[in-house]
Image (cartoon, rainbow, N blue to C red; front, side, top):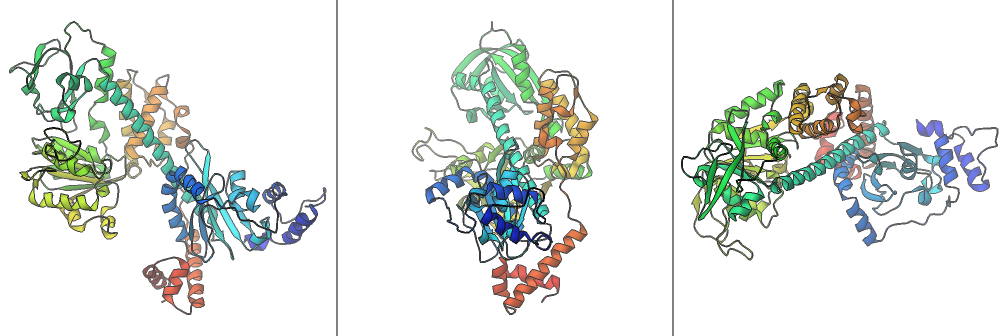
Length: 638
């Protein structure tokens, strides 16, 4: 459409402008030239329209630029790979906000290498440079390009914006010798929308890490000792104050029976005096506060605050703030949606048997909370011990899981250290991000699951361990098996019972329930009166697609509670990306049919050029031969 309607006399207008500097006389608008192109040509008046001296970054400068844009590249490259699969001899570019090419995926002989600068100052009018200046989607065809060497080109680009709405790059699709796919701007916009959603999610994740770090500092800087004790009396958490008192690491206290460090028969009640005993240490203490919390299955836990100074006065606000941080996780797993009730019924059944469980789901859906619920309902007497397989350096993961003996390696703790498996004996070991585990550790883990015995690093004697295994991943682990990234035999060992945690967008009917629950939680936590959510706000929450899932919803509500002055949460308190979110458009049957016909035309033409040679055709199209065979069969081209 563009080539037929726009080219007209544009070649004559272009020639007149670059030769004489005249676009048109003052009384007439040039027909067939868009205002966007006219404005760009004027900006490019000092650019040589014929000669081109390619500017490409030196290797070191390119490495630096790629490192600076690593987050954008890691998120965007899978998207532009998907866009490249639409067929046609196109070149897909990912560029930064200055027009430098960061990544190229080419389905044709022509390619544009990383490091090339595509700004208007170097290439004149072109989709990359012009879109960066205009700040929106741009298509440029044929003679609309300012440089003559691009007059056979057609290209389109859509900018990518960060959570602060600043342009950080763009996606471009270029065809050097033909037309662009039908609906190209729509395709690029869909890709950009996915990238921008992921960028927002990464930003929220960074904020959550900062918040968790701050809360950890608050807990560890408290003037009181703090212990968390489960329903069996086992210590599950401790702050730095008590660790300093007893001179131990936290993992030395985790799993210890709380009554073992008290004088026999002493009741833990506010104001009660008691002696804290640990090994040879004995400290006189006074109870400050005890707060019980309840899990979704009715199991009690307690937050215990005490001081070694009997004349110390309690700062009620500090205590209440600390208690609220450890609220029951019940609100995070509530839900009435049919898909959620089905999941919880499955999790309850899984809790009754000792079988291993594989939990799959997107980040923020609550995989660890489901695992904790299964553990608590199981009745196992040992601890719930989590470990993030992706967060532990590969050189330390073995000692973290299996422990180590005295002198096992340089820097090893004197006396050795027990590992997560031993800590989870008679309890549950939760292997989060199992898909990140290295191949050699997969072999070690498989052996342990088979034999139920561990050997600490540097040790010679194995130990029998009765730990139930719950594993979780945000990947498609079976696809990882097919890709060779995860052992098939280990997959079957872990995947005895499979639980898929749905994303929040699949259970939108639970959003009002979850949102109101979070409001109550944070109002109580921040000592604010209970608030209501305005109907318009609830509608916006319902419309949004929640790439960060329940965790993101919790963060949004927490922010709203913090900054709301009255008793009603209004839409002005919501961040722009919630208020301005537009649900991703679906491709209509007509659009889809047009794309299919275009793809069939491209495949048939390429087969004809290659005289039916499927292998060469697949290479020219940039797709696998099996994929081409499948498409040919489906299109009746076999």
